Every structure is written in structure tokens, then in C-alpha cells.
Image 1: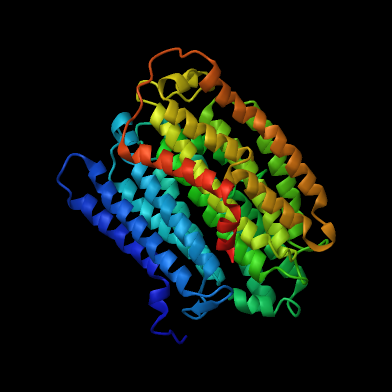
Image 2: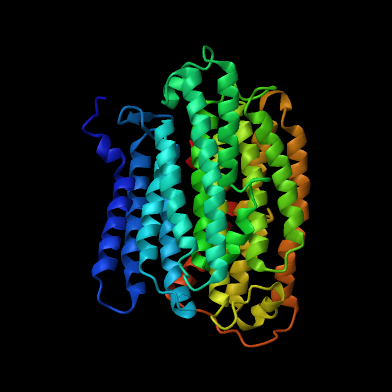
Length: 487
């Protein structure tokens, strides 16, 4: 392989996160202070620096311009840097909200910050992947870090159980992914996605079909699509809330980023996606089932974290609809997906930041009734949560409304309106989802408080709640400005 000397510049965001993560691991080993949350500053700085580098490289490239790096292992383009910037911001916010929760819930573990950045390194690899080996390395680097973070509260039996379930399900998903990649290699004779795209017509169709179906199943686990979703509610509930926020926002963004590369860009077009043997056939069925099951299950939840977990499952189904639309040649599919990911990630981070703010060690206030009267005691927190919930439900004037609008519109623009039926299912379920989001809003504004709130106050939590709510509203008021980031 001939590596260009300038390739390192284009992976600056990945290098920044990796180096900052290693520094944090060393700092934790040699840090003599008792307050491990002091390490959060370096983690935030690493995330912000990676985001700034991603934005600078995004502006450096022209729309539609791309450059393959390190023998086609990675690709540098605007889509990748937009997603890298988003992931870096989520990493910084996950580090920012953690100290208050750590102090309030007595799990001040410095390893969290190093693992956070190293897992983020794998996520950024997925945003720029153009080779099956890079996809595998990115997925495993991300996953192992998240498994560990889920179990960081070592004395929590629920957290340990959640981490074990997540790990075991992830091991099965890794098997599907590797076997699928092996079959794609057998069908085309290459693991470079660039070369795979060129050899689709001449490859072994049977091996290619089975291989792509297995990869669909593996990625369906990562986005918690039904029936690969069983780990999500338990993992979301058992993990510390900052970890849950990171898991819900960043892991889903990274998984969809990899799927945009693998399915939307390299395995899309007229040759493979649809028909009896196309990958979009099982994916669109998974999308319809996921949207419906996620919403129906969320209606029955009285636990806020489990409700948001099933909500996240439903949103994963909508993202699969966008991926099918992109694979079937919708001209707006990619930009709609990137817009959706930005709106979803920031909304989710904002919602879980409020969950972290409201709870305390004595009372985490995870029941919906526990939020009664929050608006009268802490109106700013209640307002931020309301904005996030309305965005998750797809209500104007929030970014969530236009996110769903653009994805469903891109589905309607796909070949021969083949996705019309799943678009109808998605729209109906979006209306249904308003019910369970408004249950929490009703409790906050129209029920009397049952006790005093003792929130986990910190400047980081306040900043995160405010930032996410403001950006979500800005995305709803100026949608076209944000829509251009996917090009």
C-alpha cells in the first residue's frame, strides 16, 4: 500500500481522541487526588478539539469531494466530518454531565473518561470507514468500551446484569458481522468496499446475498432494531445515566454512520438493494416492526429510562427507513439521515441530562410519577425536558419534526415509491408516540409535587440541558441550514 504523507492530517479528529484517551488512562493511573471527576476537563477538551478539527476539515473539502486514505481503509468527505463533529460533541457532553452524577451517586471512577474517548475513537473510524476491516475494528473498539462503561458502578447488581446481557448479545452480533464480511469477501474477492461496489455485478450472488443479510442482522443489533433489541431497555436502565446518554446517542449515530457507508454508499444503487435478494427487503421489514414494537412497548413503561429506551428503539426503525431510501437511490436520503442523526443525538443527550439532573442517590426519580410538579420547583429543567420530548415525538417547531419529515420524504422519493407502505406506518406511529411523551409532560406541569427535589446541580449539566434545547429549537426554526451538512 502506498500511503500519502498528508493522510494523517485527514484523520486528525481520530488521532486527537485516541491521544487524549491514552493521556486520560495514564492520568488516572498516576493521579493522586481523591476527586477523580477532575479528569473530566481533559475529556471535554479532547472532544471539543476533535470537533473543531472535524469542522475545519469539513470546510476544507468541497461538496461531493472525497479522498481515500491509507489504501482505501478510510474515506475523507464532508459527510464523515459532519458525523465526526457530531460524535465529538456528544463525547464532550457525556464527559461534561458525568461529574455531577458521579458525586451524587458515589461512583467517581476516573477510567470512565479514558474509556469514553477511546470508544469514541472507534466511532469516528466508522464515520470514515471504506473497508470491511475498518468497519470491524471501529465496531469492536466502540462496543468494548461501552460494555465496560455499562458496568462501571461495580456495586450495582442491576448494572452488572445489564453489562453482561449487553456483552453476550454483542458477541452474537460480532459473529454475524464477521461471518457476513467473510461471505462478502468470498463473493467478491476483496474486503475494500470500493472494490466490492465495482464487483457486485460479477460476484457470487448467493454468497453476496447471505453475507449482506448477516451484516444487516449485526447492525440491527447496534441500532437496537426488533428482534435484536432485547438488551437495550435493561442496559439503559442499569447503566449510570451519563453512560446511558452516551449509549443512546453516540452508539446509534456511529452504527448508522457505518450503515450509511456500507449499505447506502457502497452496496446501494440499482444492482443490489431491493427485490427478493436485496438487503433493503429484510431491512425495511425490520424498520416497520421496530417502529411499531418500540412505540407500543414505550406506552406501557412507567420508568423514564426504559420509556426512553423503547423510544430509542422506535427511532432506530425510522433511521432504517432512511437507509433503505438512500440505498434505493433517493437523492435526499443521505442529507435527511445526517439531519436526523444530529437532531436525535442532541435531543437524547438533553433528555438524559435532565434525568441525571433530577435524580439523587436517595431517589433517582425514574418513575414518571416521581416527576410530578417538577415545573413548579425547577421550571428551566422542566422546559428543557419538554422541548426534548416534543422533538422526540416529532412536534413542530423542533428539529425532531423536520428530521422525520425529511426521512419520510426521502422514502417517498425512492424508486417507484416502494417504501410508501413503511412511510405510512412511520407517520401513524409518530402520532402514537406523542401519547407517552406527553405523559411525562403532564406529570411535570399538571400534577402536584410529592416531595422535595434534590437535583444534582453542576454547571456542566446546566450547560448541556440549555445547549441541547436551544439547538433542537434552532434546527426546527432554521431546518435548511442544518440539512446541508449531509452533503
